[in-house]
Length: 471
Image 1 (cartoon, rainbow, N blue to C red):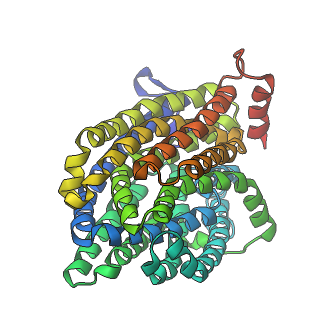
Image 2 (image 1 turned 120 degrees about the horizontal axis):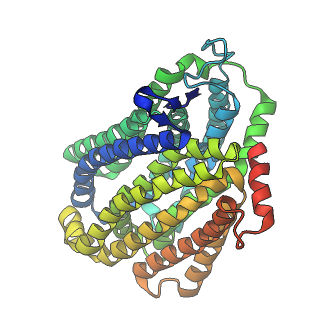
């Protein structure tokens, strides 16, 4: 019997491969692939942090983070949750591993996998262009609101990178359908940080420091997007991106993905809101200090984000089939690996934060060491707890956005109460605690989904899994 990523049944030598064993083998392989990618990304990130800190300084770095944060938030809105739900639409197409139909053709009109991706791209690009225009129009208002009045032009121009981010995210998600991990590693761990480092250094050397960071990030996103396009073409053929668009299908995909999209939007807002709040209450320089601490944490954070697309195909298949044991097994294989990889980095940032910030950014960034320690502890705890949100994407799609709203409400209430009284360190504590509240909400919901027969789980939970899987 054919199984995505291999076969199961009797094997040479009397061995028997079951879906659970193949799931674990796939997750193991994904762990090592991403560990390799992490080391490559770390090698490119080190000179980038050095250049951003030493060559550009906290103020220019803060302006860059505000402009980039607005564009990335817009991209999260425009992607509409397809980074998580696209697997479901591709699975429902009934394709085999090669992405072909039963006749074995890859014709654009007959390739249903390509049609699902094509519709997601049309929806995402339409929203991205609309949001880019809105950001450009609102740039004169947003720049002073977030403590960067000199960055109006930067925000207006960089807004048009949003469509590039959307295309990259959707295409890289599609490449996971066949459990091919190398394209995402090449795009996010090689092309993106490598290009950004080279271009940022080149712009500094020729004296264009005002636009160097944003130009380097734009060039890096284009390079990563082209890498994603190459990876998609290798698996499904670029012809599958061309063909008819069915408005009814686009509307149905939009409707079904909207709740997960709301979760991704809230997650992005929670990830970026600190910078906006720090900019509002303090300045672009404060954003630069806070952002430098966050940049170190992109490494453990990317580990968490990388595991999600690795395990989501397994969760989607098992929950749609009602196989809760297989779903629990997949999560059990993922959690210790993610915790170990993130834990090593987070402990290093807590212990050696002052040294790292001073080394990369100079003495002017040493003040961000308490922020780095607080956020590192928070990332480790919250990233592990947030794994509970993965099965909810399939089984309880409304729980994740609900938990995000709870976190956002708690965050805004706390910020309104303390404002700038405790400095940027206070903002970091509020951020960690607000995320913790939302993740605990997800955890109890996920427990009811994955263990429906326990006394703690309410009876409707077990029915909901079957119902959601059937839908």
